[in-house]
Length: 430
Image (tube, rainbow, N blue to C red; front, side, top):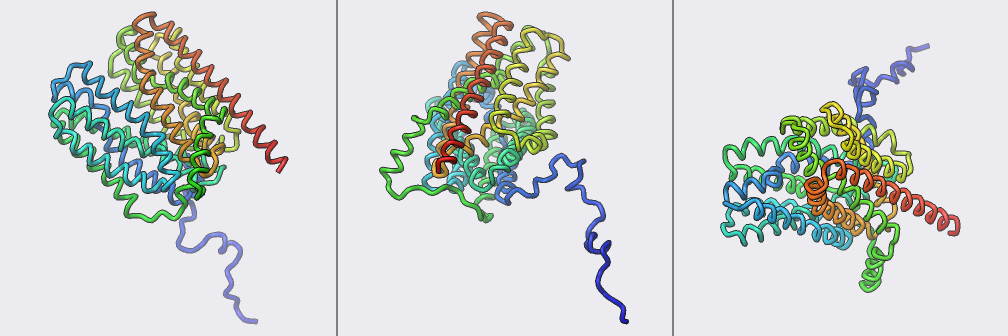
């Protein structure tokens, strides 16, 4: 009887040239399980990380216009408002183009063109030229988001959507923790250097998408009959559940954007807190998102979307509404933690919900409508919050925010549950 050379059972369980312990599947790793996501999702992760790590002109646009170009605060604010107005238009346009020619060309063009626009913006001298360049820059830059959301929807399965969107937001938040901080340093040295770095990172992010292969689909099937396509495109306005979702998105977006408007004014002027304290709250928000958003969405991936939508809206309502009765630094910190959990649950669930209800050939259009709703909230939310704070005081403004968040939660549940019932009836009858 000869000696066998077949491996024992124990040997087959531990392949050669591998560590006996791997951190990837460990419970100590909060991002375990993400290796199953398609390569294209990780490509978008890298693209967003590079792009957002260099995003610094927009947060310092008002400061640049007032200090370098001699604008009054009102004129500088108008420049920022024009950026928001262009974003409202760019969202639906991006969605329509993504459905027609694919999301990948739109993302590539958005990054390369917006990088060039940022590089050229300091060359504008007159007020009209600066406003025109700002609109051009915004129109190019804001084409990216709806196209990227549609691209993710096309390459992942339904059970991977929440983790994929959470990973996408992780890249954005990591990048945004770097970009504005670096921008503050560069602005103190040279505003022109800030524009150059922002433009360079945006163009590099575009080159990453241009020079790497994309194997997954970038759009759904679009009918060859142009008239039929346009008639179906009009159905967005007839999709009552989509319209309810968009109304809820605007309402909860108004609540969310108070963290950039009414919240800092409330902390500094009413609670006599320092700007450093406000900055610390931002840091805590970012750290929580980086550490917990991906595992939180993996853990709740099996939830019906309406559950996550309701929970996210209510956490926003409670987090901001509690400021009506909270005034201590510790209490404010707790409210930030509460609405940060709402942020981590709500935004991936909103994108996943749209990916589920949108017809395959109109996912870009649905994502464009969603981006437009958030742009509307950004355009009007800060103004509403600051006006309420100045006219009726903090208790009233935070009470209104609680009511808007709770109303959004109710609308999300109504729209989501009805959509599931409708889909179930259609499936049963088919």
